[in-house]
Amino acid sequence: MTERQISQAVIRRLPRYYRYLGELLENGVERISSNDLSKKMKVTASQIRQDLNNFGGFGQQGYGYNVKYLYTEIGKILGLDKTHNIVIIGAGNLGQALANYAAFERSGFLLKGIFDINPTLKGMTIRDVPIRMMEELPEFVQNNDIEIAALTIPKTKAVEVAELLVDNGVRAIWNFAHTDLNLPKNVIVENVHLSESLMRLSYNVNRYNYFNAKE
Ligand code: NAI
Image (cartoon, rainbow, N blue to C red; front, side):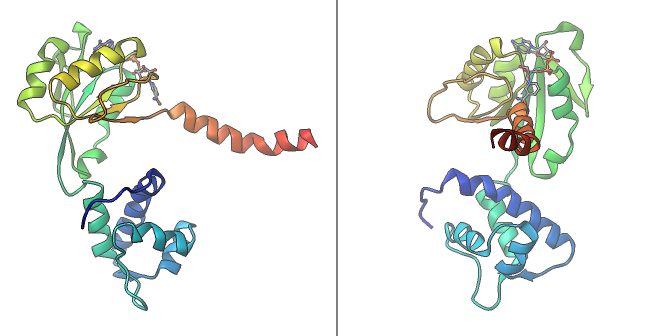
């Protein structure tokens, strides 16, 4: 299939399809109609059909979707059929929490290295991965086919460290530092802001009061 432009909104929904289909598979479900999937996921059936049509559509009229096939195909679209080598930069609270989270490995994201500037962390290991000092980073990244770097360092350092990573061949940054990185267009950046998610939650908790107060 030739590559086509797929909207970011669709891409954002794919991991959720993947998760639901994975659960169906675990429960031994072999096929599912878009209507049943729609009820489960609380998304309209037409949205599901439209989303999956972006990739050529996987359903058959009157049969529904083959769960295993759809799960596998969405996994391929998301690049989960391959392994991806990751490093974490910044072994503080957040970096250590990410490093301790073993479930990434199950999706093919392999933690290869953890880096920091704090010498007291040197040699400490998290799930058998040693924390290394930043001086070792360029050579390590070049020699270990590192594709993705998670940035969990203070925002004042994020830009220069991101540039160092990219100069040494890293293609994607999972950016937790609260700053824009402005990297070349061919570098993929995914910004993660838990506080924004919390603000959305707060909006939903609060909106009833806000709009009632306006009336
Ligand atoms: P922390 O202070 O516990 O850890 C930061 C670590 O980075 C320290 O170990 C420090 O030695 C290391 N570091 C500093 N400069 C460095 C450099 N140039 N190269 C390599 N390592 C360096 O902080 P915490 O709580 O882990 O937060 C880390 C970052 O993540 C902060 O920027 C924070 O604002 C951000 N954060 C973002 C969240 C999000 O949802 N996006 C949530 C929580 C934190």
